[in-house]
Length: 443
Image (tube, rainbow, N blue to C red; front, side, top):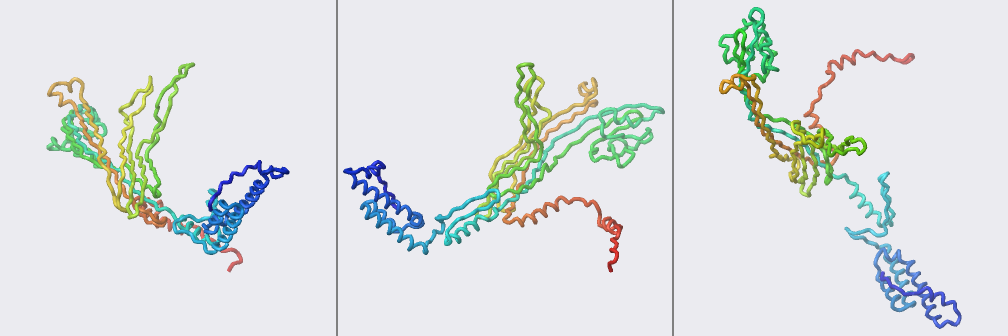
């Protein structure tokens, strides 16, 4: 509907009551024009529902031809409204006019006020909106592989003399043999032929004391002296740090944290009155942290924005902040990447390496410092380890909540919980329960 701007001054309407005014015809015409405009505005709700040729023509006549044209325009608009109300049509992907709605967040209800012919379109909109969003179940495995190049080479010895020239059981723990246990019996008669080069487990009295870590320990026995030759090399190992599973909605971020929240002193201030230090503390999550945002594409692929992180506190290093106050150093291995994979296919994120080197010398004072011969009186442990972090991610698209039952059954099978009672014990317990006696008077 065309809008016409009228420059009508209220003062001229009041001058209409003044007798003998020269502007009376103009004021009268303005008053009649205002009345005609009011009639047009009353018919506006029906005209706005659908564009009508009669309404547009009447509006133009009113603006150009004064009162007569305006009246014709009003009649034309009313006629157009009555002739097209029953044949109203709506575009397929457009807006629906004359529809009002209200949302109640507490009860999660939507109230619509619409004409009767618009109800099917409103119901179609509600049907399209009232659908659960697909979810993505992401199974993760944080695997740490250690490429170890460690060696433990040296000679340890002990000497003991007891009553009757017997070698006591404490002789094996005189120097550096903590955790191994006694290597001999209660007297020196427990010797073995061809003693040199026999592993330490051959000299233990019981089989239960044999440890798997003793391979590579060799011992030479005498009446009152024993020497242990260490030649141990450690191989690499793999350890699963964490195996979490996280369920995230489509296009919604999700976070999982397996670790602890560590307080860190960030700054220190002092009280101006008594000089008491005031520490400012902040908390930081340390452990295994995974942040992921999944996106399901139209062709069934899963695009993931992944930010994994594995952190730990370095117990050997700290940073001084003030006098008597220090903050620990946190070792962090993290990545931030975007990966696209089909449904149910595993992707691997690797290359997060960490190198550690250490060397420890254990020796007898003075004797271990003798050039060349000092090697017979000391032990050297050298470790050169490279640790690699591998992250396995497997997404599963969950269209319906019923699909979670099958995926949950797979997880339960991997963590079989022991039964507190066997079936035989449970049946025996049920059989020993007192029988319920029938009520008196009942047949």
